[in-house]
Image 1 (cartoon, rainbow over the protein chains, first blue to last red):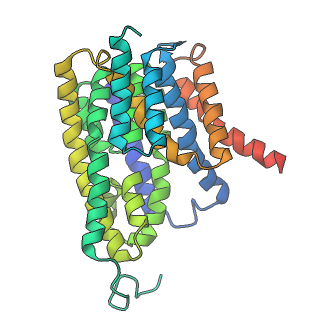
Image 2 (image 1 turned 90 degrees about the horizontal axis):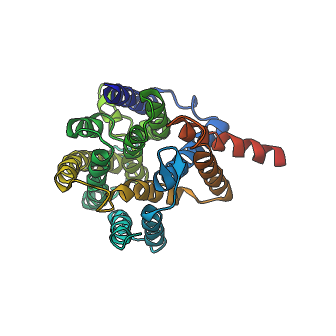
Image 3 (image 1 turned 60 degrees about the vertical axis):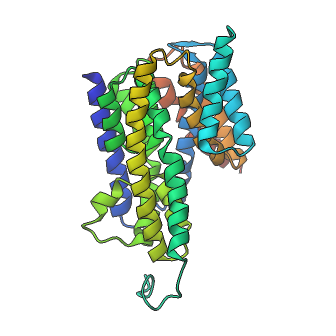
Length: 102
Length: 233
């Protein structure tokens, strides 16, 4: 039940902001500070989510095979690999480290 | 807006074939990553139906990953949805740019709105004229929507068939997707400072705050860095 509630809230909220952008008169969201903040919010959220899903286990911070996988993804990104290859590298390296008992 | 834009008064614009090819390239590459979402959703304990409903009705990847991640971490539905919502707010800014560029009829806007995401905005905004922008937006949106939903379903079913997604390293797909989305945003020192502070807040608060809240608290890194920058000037 809780999961469905979260899904409905997210779907409604995400659709509302998409539609708002198309309907709002230009200028309302054009203030420099608002634009700046809107550009930086995703940076903060994505960075925090990346870190949590790599180093988080419940309420603890741990270092395990996922960190090696993320490092592989980082290297793939530096080498300008396509999106799917970046994800594939992370998955393969994580599985490999776990298979080796890491 | 000048009446000539997109009409006969304009030079030929870009060849339709090239616009379609660019749009298909983006749509297919990103659309296939719905597989990673399906797998991550299944690993987070979300049902196949729930994962598919998310892809059909939320259709903005980062928000979907954030939601299932927060639910898996035990976050309550409101904080989980709030994090996903804040990630989706950037789409409002794409819509603002696109509404001028595409000049869609009012009746079409509620439908087009669902497709306003990073990739459709990127393709449409890269076009030199309105006709190409409309074509690029439509082809990218349609390809991505169809593939994203199909691959979500395949990913969930595949993950359920595999069983333990962790043994296959599939729990690393989510963070890798976030990193791939984040990397191109880290252009200036300000963005990097925000990212570093957000990581510190997100991990530092993990043991002390209830699940879901540390990510929301980490969002404060954005106004905090802007405020610090403003003071230094």
